[in-house]
Image (cartoon, rainbow, N blue to C red):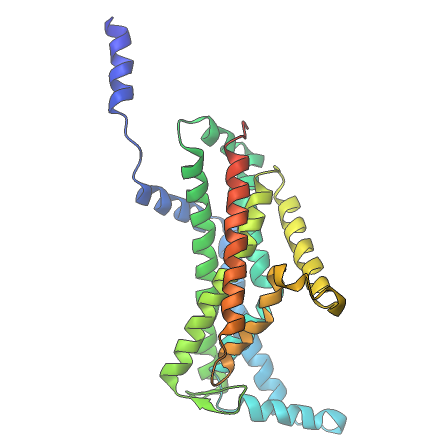
Length: 290
């Protein structure tokens, strides 16, 4: 009787770990991975390299047919350093940032399944939805960190290398320092949401395989296919369903006044992918036994 009462008492007094502690532990675990730190280092290096490259190209004394092109670059970037983070984030959305979101989603499920860590978590008395939410939070936090890091380093590198404290918009007007920072912050949020959409799809794929490279290849392959489909005008009826369709409109943050219709549609499209991706991942997790 006593032997049976002790386990029953322990089971009755067992409590769940605080969600904040779980989220903090997951984020700390992901940040300690060497490949995560390398990826964040590369993200921080991109604006610096881009700023140096633009500065060297715009100040080079090159004659011939390319002279006018380089003079045009010099006229755009001179005292317009705050445009650098916008330029870098728009350029990175073509492949770099989605690749990082896919990589982290692949590591959090398929990567742990390959090492056997996920099996132990699934066998433990923990809710599958709770486990997936913690994993998704870690991926989402890293995506936000990557976009914010690129923006901050881009601001510092732009003002240091290219100079200026205003932003020359694509409409020809100049925004003061405060509004320029607001536009960059808005672009950071929009880029992060798009990364979340890609990461959600990668998370769903990650729950179906034990090989992280399969997740990465499938997600990046899908982005390439979506990009090709988006370039075919005869498939314009399909374009609203492509997540890549809203990435070009992110450049609208550098216009004055800023159009919001395409940006809003891009956010809603990414939100749909987030809901669909997480729902598929949850459906797979609740039925997964190893």
